Image (cartoon, rainbow, N blue to C red; front, side, top):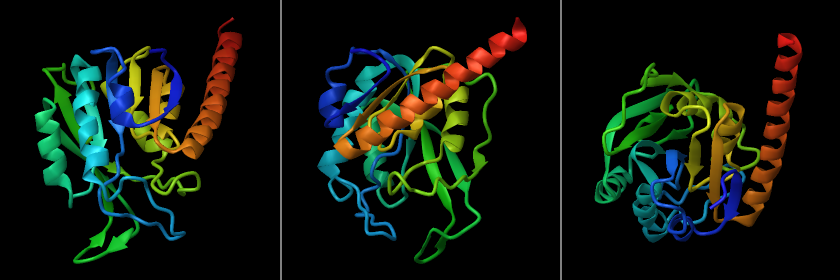
Length: 226
């Protein structure tokens, strides 16, 4: 399968067509299985459907290189189900990253002021040369393009920490695809998979702009270096 594209389709089905062991890094933000709706009433497909999310992890792990990482965002309420699915796919949790917010995103028994992602390992990948802090500051994306859009600024450090230039970064729940934008801006290849066609179109437009910006930066560097 060709790199540097956004594919509109079911993640599990698409991942099964990808060459085994071809993905260097996965960064993904799947539905948390909480039937989420934002302030505008927008929702996510499969956010109340275990069968639309958990079966993705096995073909995802198959597509990953033998010694590689996946960074998966997750809410706490479905963490037992996610953990079981990750372990069944041959992925082990090796670390957690928490982003601290300066505002309350939701109220329940406590005020929710953070987001979490889990660092998953396939095989025994080398530890990062410069490990990032397990506590990061949150950057709000504004959610203009997608109800749960992650800011490129929080994903770019993950790309730099857990991959190297030229690597293939895959997001099987890509949404408006901040992951691929972060990959392009840091000299990596990308592969995004998204179920909703409208989000794919948004992502492709963003990637066009990201590639243009990357090319302009390279041109400016060449002029300075000449």
